[in-house]
Structure formats: C-alpha cells, structure tokens
Amino acid sequence: MATPESTAVDVALTRVIVTLQAKLTAALAAAEVAIAGLPLDAPAAGAYFMVGSADYIETVVPNHLVSCFVYQAGPSEIESHHSGNALTYSAYQTFEMDVVIAYGVAPYTPFTRAGKTTTGADIMALRGHRYNAGVINALRQYAADETSIEDIRKVSDFAGAVKFNEEGQAVRGYATSTWEVFQNATVFHQTLST
Image 1 (cartoon, helix red, strand yellow):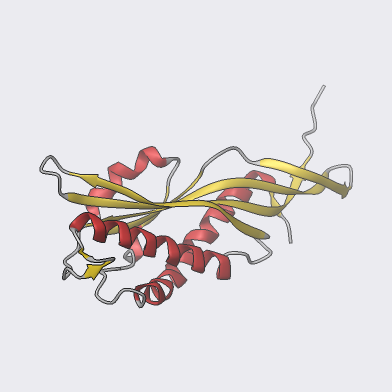
Image 2: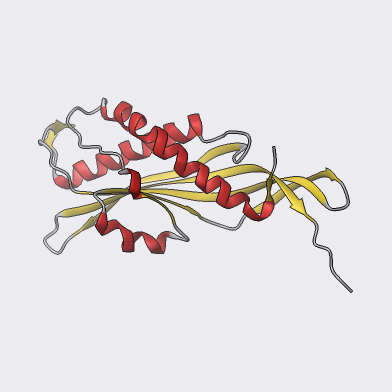
C-alpha cells in the first residue's frame, strides 16, 4: 500500500519512533547480556522525539537520562516511477534518517576489560555500542511494515561520541545510526490553472 508522497517521510519517521518505543527495551536487554552490569536503560515513554535536525538535540537532552531522536538526515528522492493514471502514479521514495540515542552518566561498577579497569569514558563508549546494537536489531526486525516503510537499511553507525565537562569527566554519550528508508509512495500530479 502506498503512502502519499507529501506525508511519506513523516509517516516513516513516526513508524520508526513507534517501533523503537515498542521494541527497544527488549533489544537493549539482549545487548546488555554481553556485558553484565553495564547500565543500559531504555528511554522513557516521553523521551522519544521527532526533530527537524541534530541541532535540536541539545535543547532536549538535559531533561532526560536517556532519550531517542529521529530525524530526516537529507532530502528525499523519487527513485523510479511506475505507471499510473493521469492524476497519480506510484514510485519508490528514499531518504536517509538518523536515530540518535543520547544518554547521561549512570552508576556502574568498574570491571576489567582487555586487561585494564574500565573508566567512565570506557563505560560511556561501551554503552553507545550497545545502544546502537539495540536500535539496529529493533529496526531491522520490526520497522519495515510494507505500508509506511517498504525496506530499511543501515548506512552507518557511530557510538564513540562522548561529551566531557571541564574536569574531563564523561557527562553524555551519543549513539548515532544512519538509515536509508525505502517507501512505496503515491505521487499526485500538480495541475496548473491557466
């Protein structure tokens, strides 16, 4: 079933948020098993946001220990046109989106990893990798529904972004994954009046 082109991106971003709200907690629980004791809380129900760009993240982050941001990362494109009638035709629309999990410092018990005792920065980086793992698993398994999202493919992910305070202590981490979203879209021809 095709989504109108004019609302297709909004419909897909909403689908991603709904999917993550429903499936991220379980996906994070599975990712946490790999490192016992690693703090990996899911965002609270009110901490999922569809924003216009990454610029909005810092305005919301201080209010939540863990939050999730979803936004369109580039322009949408019509990939191919299919036959239709004089007023509409169907097409594949694609666009890139980013999913960012922003997370604050959480209590942890230091442990040995690769022969050294973990630091706060190590824990923040490990949490970022696990957050990305949870997002990747949840979206790959559940985001495509053949209505709002035909297919979804991970383009890249980066979990190493850690923000430090003036004393050099890790205070916030960011796990970002970029996705290419494919949609069946209905394109409405514009009629010009003379």
